[in-house]
Length: 216
Ligand SMILES: [Fe+2]
Image (cartoon, rainbow, N blue to C red; front, side, top):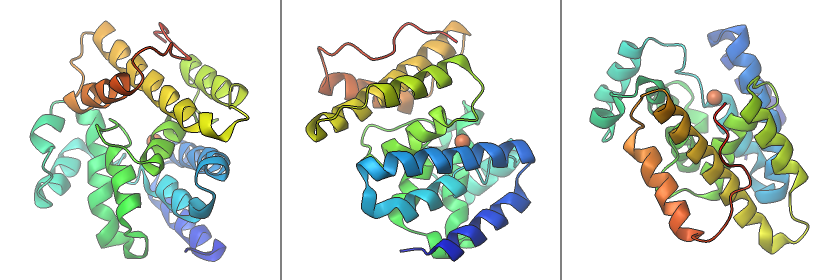
């Protein structure tokens, strides 16, 4: 879909708009999503790379700028998301792509970027890969992220049929961690994150999560 040259050019463009730290994270997500994509969506590696490169393009805009972009584009979730400003950059980035990166304006890329900070009640495998790669990419310094990454790869099932549940349970572990982390700090989580976790809990009612109880 996209060739190496197009993806390199995209990477160079993104590099000029982000701080060094944010770009390093972006590169980490790209690296991690390629590794995951080879297992889960081997035909969509280019699209996954583009989603990784673009997912944080709004992260360093001011919150007011992010709100402005969401408002201009009629973001249906703005009124709830506005209470958790940290999640708005996913929505804003999704709206920036048709305008600034039209070549990469594919529904699955837009969807994954829109949902990458909160998850969602309905997530495709593509959405889940960006969500998880963003969290466990190798440049994330936090203990839980590093543990999640190590465990994700260590426990990757040999049997193909078990690999989707494996991905789901790690996505759920991250959602649960986020909910716990926010509540421990007296922050009310965004309802979309709650709904995303509930949907997966319902799907795997009796499963023990690969990671649970961690708070940092
Ligand atoms: Fe990110």
